[in-house]
Length: 438
Image (cartoon, rainbow, N blue to C red; front, side, top):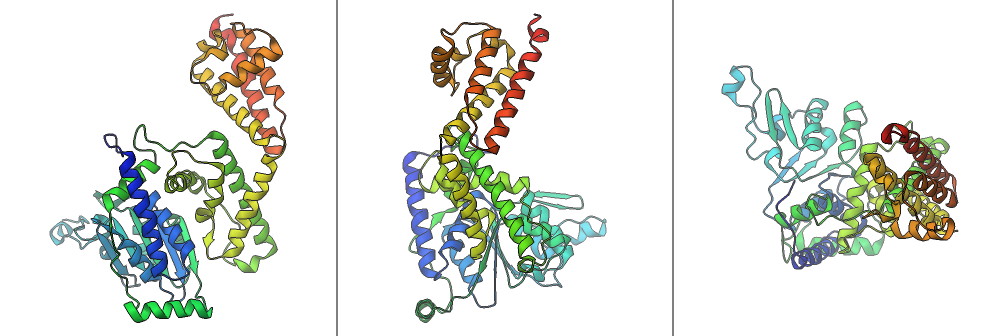
């Protein structure tokens, strides 16, 4: 964690401006691939990996190489996978003297382990033994082989493939590549014309950009996005986080309904499952979206772009389903003060957590507690409904119960949240005799 670094506003503004220009430059160089480019830059900002699938000759390598060329001061490891390769292709050759002693020790100099960026072409051509070895390196950023343990410098790996090979190992590998895209060759005449023009000038090779972004600045930005710079975190309001989780849950149900109705579309899938690990990573993406807009707080509108993480870019049906999930949940909570009630319940839940950690606070008027987001709301409501605010545990119990009952759930999810909070209030005060000796 970066505990002793910070980013000045001027430096932040300059980086965001150049990053946006860099995205535009790559989009101009790689024709008609704007969503894929944006997705990969999201992967870079969140220090995650990206997988590009397409048929041969669709420009996967050009796209990856052109993106990596935007940065300076970072090592790039490139390899084309094959079935004959062993782990030392990626981790460096074995030390012969150590091998004679029965120890697997890789010389990692120049390998993926010592590189910030990586490009693995035709990744599914690699054998399962090698892919299994890559898992911890990609996920944990560490080489673990025998007695050897080396921290990896890996920031982001882009992998490309012409096909998906489904097995227990490859499914685990796919989970390491949070951002996925399917590049479908565009046969529209004008798009083909644009591609031909660029080929005549550059021969299908990446070109040096007009400027480069220091890798150190990208790393610093990713530290801010991940909340690793004290005092410079990007805030995520609780109601926005709850809303995002509702959208993702509904999207998961829509995908499973679609899978049941059209099993031929995904013959290798029995069900569609979003792991808690992947869902938690949505927090980083939301922060990255806010960051690119030069904001220090995530908004409700940012949730719409979570399709970068939860869908395969290029499969319009998946994106449409996510958009449907977002709009449906948004409509539910935009009506009849749904977001207002949700925010009040979540703030009350935060207050209950605070009181559980320090029950002595219940001896004071709750409305006088410092740093409580509910303070003004609860105080105004208490004066209107219960008269003057008095100190004491029993009064606080009545205040919390009455305030929670005043919130009218607009849908099933809010009703469930309210029931959870009522249970929490009961549990808090049921133990008051033990806590205060009453």
